[in-house]
Length: 181
Image (tube, rainbow, N blue to C red; front, side):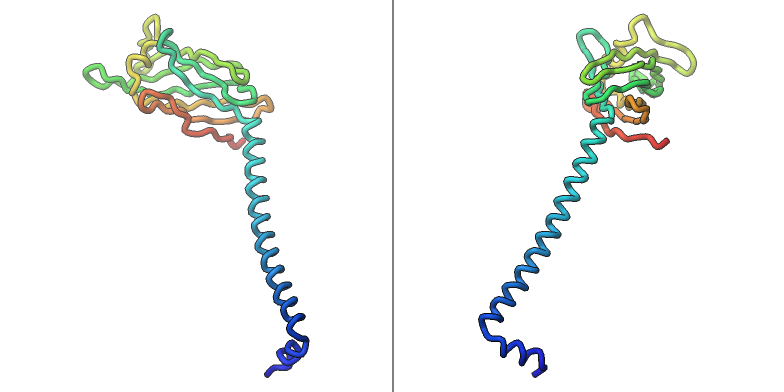
């Protein structure tokens, strides 16, 4: 037998039991420390998300069917400034498919938990085909597959890009991402 095993046997059963218990305690604590490291990493990620959420505008789009208008709502805790909806292609079916481009007016600022009406015009190429009430266009074609890209900034001037899609007669936010400068 190796010398170390002979020396361990000479220590006695009580000491051996204590040594095994100490080894199990070390293994248990090591596992707990790894678990704590994982929990701390999760908490850091949640904290980073909350920090971003506190400085990231989150805009949602709703269709007001009574007044035939589109309303952009700031559902975040921070201001959204320099809000611009990029030109959006739209296909309408009027017996044949017609491609139009919607061009939106910029919005200077939307405060947290407030709304602003989107004003837009429809273009066929460079020809403005908007009638006196363009708001009805999206209401007449609710399933047009419209996809809007919205750019804005928070009060610190950090730029963000958001994609809103029209699916199953609802506008859904596909994602909000900071824009690299």
